[in-house]
Amino acid sequence: MRREGTKNYYYVNSDETQWRELKDLMNYIYEIVQDVNCSKNEEENF
Image (cartoon, rainbow, N blue to C red; front, top):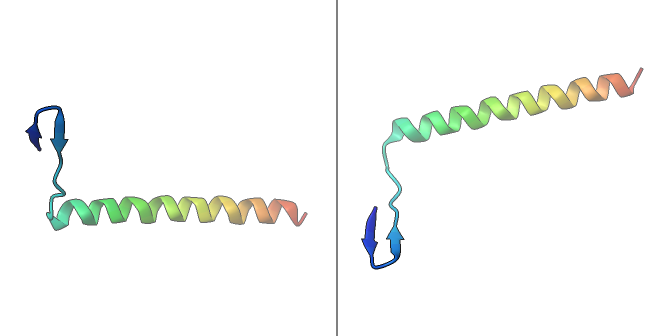
């Protein structure tokens, strides 16, 4: 982060490990949402 007066400038790190971990987290969340939706649809069909 770089500061100029009251402004803060943030930079994105290009470290692939952090991006991979973020991608894995998003994929995990997506799978959970899909499972919940499938369960909900199955309950509605009964």
